[in-house]
Amino acid sequence: MAVSPDYRTYPRASAATTAAVLDAGLRAYMLRVYNWMTSGLVLTGIVAYAIANTGLIDAFYPMVATPMGMARHPSALAMVSIFAPLAFVLVLSMGVNRLSHTAAQTLYWLFCAAMGASLTNIFLIYTSESIVRVFFITAATFAAMSIYGYTTKADLSRWGSFLMMGLIGIIIAGLVNMFLASSALQFAISIIGVVVFTGLTAYDTQRIKATYVQYAYAEGPEGAAKRSVYDALSLYLNFINLFMLLLQLLGNRNNS
Figure 1 (tube, rainbow, N blue to C red):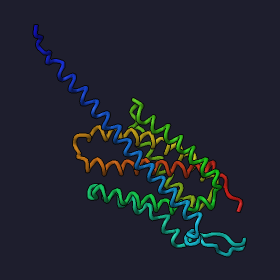
Figure 2 (spheres, rainbow, N blue to C red):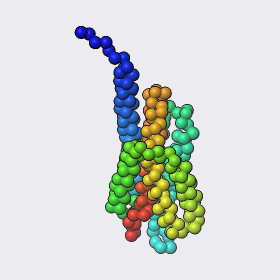
Figure 3 (cartoon, rainbow, N blue to C red):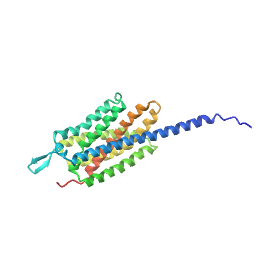
Figure 4 (cartoon, rainbow, N blue to C red):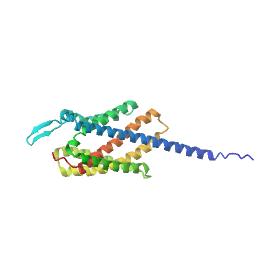
């Protein structure tokens, strides 16, 4: 005997299928974001290491005679490299609606290379062993907080204003300490900074997840490809800042 189909099950099946497709798309999107971020970190590391361990170091930090003997000091090129990443971030931020995804990707690679040049001096200040050790500590901390941000059911959006206030406070305190040169203030900045960027890692991961779910069907492949670069940039900046702050706290300085 033929049985009539129960059409009441169709919407339920459709909703389940839609949720499965959305979940698969989210995982693929997050993988793309993490790939962008990781590739950018690799490029940054390669550029920094290459400059620090080749003759290029003399162009960025030439040896200069001082009352204490010969020492490396930043050249004009080094100063340009220090501020260049900020210029790229501003261009990417202001051009978010005008840049194509190809242009955004190109600027992202240039930004990561410029960041590598700006970080060359860490190889002059800290031992290679401590740089590697702190990098893995940073990677473990970042991964744990990013996984938390992705999986938690808690709403982390309420952290946003608090973390942004902390970030602004760190920037202001850092500018003030450029003139005060207080080791105690710098230590406090580093401690607070680690807390802020650890929190931002979880917050931004959840924000990226929520944004994808919100715009999954409203934007085409071009929009998603461009947005993945900006999302990767957010996580990249969290990682770099967390690494630098932990290096100030845990890094071993060169004796020379």
